[in-house]
Amino acid sequence: MGTAPSRPATTRRRHPVPEALGPRGERLAAAHLEEHGYRVLARNWRADPARDGVRGEADLVAEHEGVLVVVEVKTRSSLRYGHPFESVTPGKSARLHRLAAAWARRHGRDPLLIRVDAVAVLLPARGPAGIEVLRQIE
Image: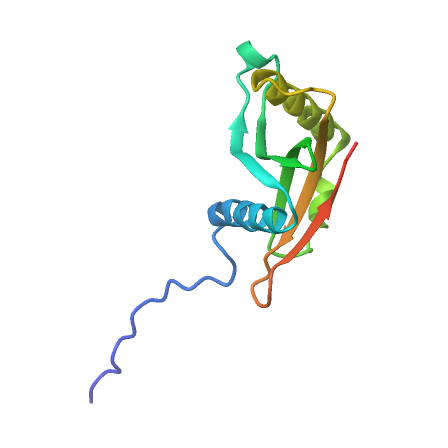
């Protein structure tokens, strides 16, 4: 009596690896924005607190219709824990506005012509990605 042949262990995952979810969402968001007239100037720009007077990172820095736009990208694999925009708090929004002003100063741009947008990317285990843009968050 023989034994059944062993099957190799599978490494399939039901959901994307968490580390890959954010960068994938940022790539999709950048492509979506470019399709809608944005010009991406920087990705994952990190401020230097000593130089810029603010701490943090902007997922995307872009230009749209002559306005400098700092974009916060929030990516989720489901809505189980709420919509991605729900995690953009007033404190986060204020920090993004400070980052936008710091980027503008450092790159010789008018700090009065800035805007902060948010992009929600939904990457379900099955089906197409969903992308929503919320312009001019306060």
